[in-house]
Amino acid sequence: MSGTHDHSHGSSRISPKALSRLRIALVITSIYMVAEAVGGWWTNSLALLADAGHMLTDVGALALSLAAFSIASRPATPQKTYGYYRLEVIAALVNGVVLIVLAFYIVWEAIGRFRSPAEVAGLEMTGIAAGGLIVNIIAAYLLHAEHEHNLNLRGAWLHVMGDMLGSVAAISAGVLILAFGFLWADALTSVIISGIIIFNASRLLRDSVDVLLESTPKHIDLTEVETAIAERSAVLNVHDLHVWTISSGIEALSAHVAHDRSIPETDLLLEIRDLLQERFGISHLTIQLETADHSTDKVFICAMGGNCFESAASADR
Image (tube, rainbow, N blue to C red):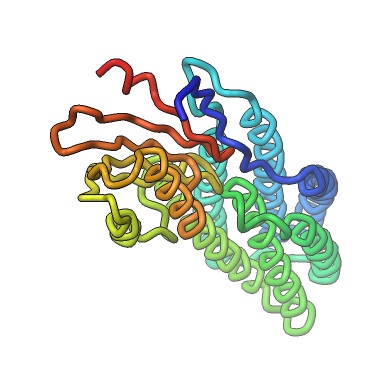
């Protein structure tokens, strides 16, 4: 059980196929973003310009995601012992902030349009928005497969989904302008798009901040974890228990476990490791096994690969 600990965390990386899809989504979104921006200027549609602006953040989100995945794959160093996993979370945080700033800017512009509606080319606006919807549907399909398992990829997917709804709203505004001459529909659509952006971005920000603050993951009940460990036959009590997220799909746990000597320490450690992996999906563990007199306290670290090592901290006692 003892030996050199290499802090190998395994991988929360997305698959090569998903990475390829992410690149394709970036290319098609970038191309249509330019087309929609030009179309918004041509038709004098604030809704289209807002949607193009949202597409710009889509492009930024996708590009930032690709960069984050590349950098995060670098191995850990003595200075950065967890590697670069957290760059994915930081990228998601930046995406959320940019989205909210953009949303409030769109609302500000829309207020001016409500006061003084501008002429909008409804037919051209509707056609361009429909094209944007098709591009967003394709991008959302490409990103959907793994977006639930990775916070940064989910941020990019949320950008695209928000933009898809924005395209639907822009199409609706174009139809209202064509059918009834309701020029205010363009400004109203802009506000709707902003509301969608703010809703999605606030959720992304909340999840990103929770990870950076090392909050207990939402899907893990800390009391339940403590009870499950304490129920092991040789365990006397559990204290200093912490569970946090390193990055998407990587949960870590540290705890002090007081035990009697009814079973070997190695057997108890493996029992706890298997319990936490199978029941809670926690694979990276740092556990200090303690006896009543603290004469044989030992610290063990179980990496995501499944191997457990006695930490050098034990030998220093």
